[in-house]
Amino acid sequence: MAVKKIDSAQAGAKVWLFSLLLTLQYGAQPLISKNFTSRQVIVTSSVLACEVVKVLCALILLAKDGTLRKLCKEWTLLGSLTASGLPAAIYALQNSLLQISYRNLDSLTFSMLNQTKMFFTALFTYIILRQKQSIQQIGALFLLIIAAVLLSIGEGSSKAARSSNPDEILFYGIVPVLVASVLSGLASALCQWASQVKKHTSYLMTVEMSIIGSLCLLASAYKSPDGLAMRQHGFFYGWTPLTMIPVVLNAVGGILVGLVTTYAGGVRKGFVIVSALLVTALLQFVFDGKPPSPYCIVALPLVVTSISVYQKYPYHVKKKAS
Image 1: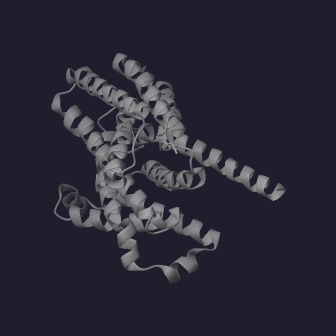
Image 2: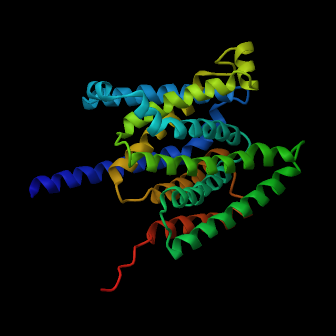
Image 3: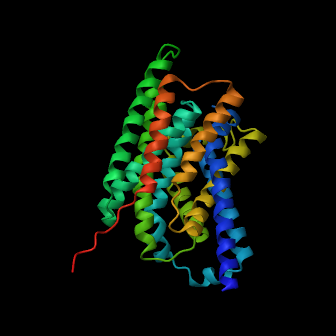
């Protein structure tokens, strides 16, 4: 009995630690990326560098756990493609869109628009897995969409007067992050479906998806403007030593997402997301000296309320009366 209590306490401590680290990473990432990544940096190069760092970190952790050799013996190409292929390709495109959006939206607006991925996750898990939502969850998702619309109107109108091209904020800021949210929801549902077929550890899934996603990104970038820019100017064009900070931070965040999901079990990640929004708002005010816009002030409680309600009232299967 005492051993079980110790194991439970250790697992709880890991959940709190990983959740805290993910909260800090998630909240700080937009601000750090915007300040430490030059606009001359080629988007594809930063995404590929992040995936390489992620693979290295995951392999080190697998070796530390003593499971690397066993996984190498049991690993098959078909199993890897089945579990990780399509989600990896989707996440690769999503990461590129997020990198573009980082540069064209303020940190808090980006973070709140990024929360619409919860709506699309719920939609695709219902379509693919038939996972239903409670009445409260449906209401929470509608609140989230209202907040996203408010932010879209506010961001477009507030910057249009200061921008030489008013459409730039919409097409290079708002649209990419919303499309990335759709892709995130689809990829999350596919990963959940794959986990029911292949029982992969979070580290192994990270390695597989990073490698497959990088190959897909390289293939798509060959004839793209990014591919041309890398051939003309080099992979690290526009990079400085500080550019590695958001790259490494983003890679660590990808691993933390898998760890939180693994160790938390039934504990939802919504608390992490809500806390991260507050971290983003605080950091933006402290470092940029920029208070939230009126639209953000109205949308923030909607986002916090919707995510909190969504996590608090899950769908329960009604028992049939005997």
